[in-house]
Image 1 (tube, helix red, strand yellow):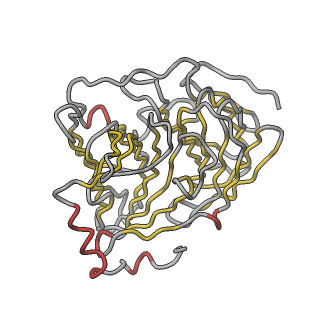
Image 2 (cartoon, rainbow, N blue to C red; image 1 turned 120 degrees about the vertical axis):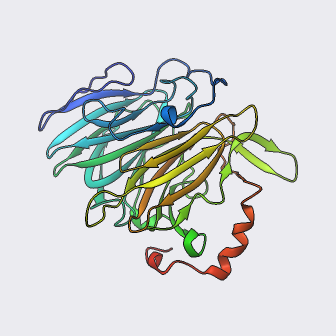
Image 3 (cartoon, rainbow, N blue to C red; image 1 turned 180 degrees about the horizontal axis):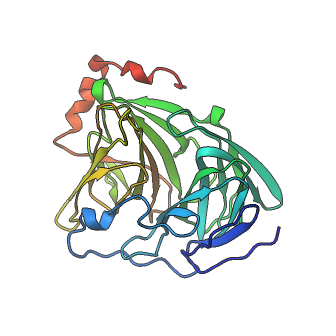
Length: 334
């Protein structure tokens, strides 16, 4: 299949059985991050569909907005028989089926991602593609597919990560219990430059990303280590019997030089950007399970995820063992 690319951040609609094309990332250096007025929910909470274009419901590219440098996310919606070509220009990527399955053709090979019925059902096959590649995503039955990206320079092999091989972690305790699928975290997958990604399931009524934490500076003083990382939260919320669900996301300032103030009601398809600051808690409304996909990367030469807990909240970790694991999260635990 022949391929083409369009300017960074653009996409054209696909017709059944044909492919549209888009370039993900930028050929130029990413924008320089700098402090400005206090970023708030109106700037960093991006409602479902508000950044979409063509077949993409969500488009967030590194360097395409002021102060956003290292990470990106696109959510691609394909009808039955549709395809999309994109060029990973200056970024590496992971393709994560949200619902439905797909085939990805890249570098002369075709990989099948079996997908899932929805993000709450199970882990899914994930495909890593390197910087400079030009994958074609095709779906016979249609579906929705996240493309998580990070600025990169080194070229690594294409890698298929089967759902069965993804480490699943149960984190927290009591009404702070959540499930983490570590398909692209440090130690679980290291065949990349800078991209860190995972997905989290929080049962209705539970709190997640708690204690609030930060990773917005590089620290290694012998006693404490922290990594500098941007982070994207992409949300899906399980519907209830009478309609859509919701949850809440909070990010607050971690110092005078890093002002931020976000308190947002989040619904399915919403995205929250975290350039810096204490982020958390994320609260799932009772009766509505919460999913979020996290995408992280930063400027440090070594890919790492080291965090600092909010000092007023770190004590809750000591309550988890006595509280026990929320029984709703039994299963898919390895």
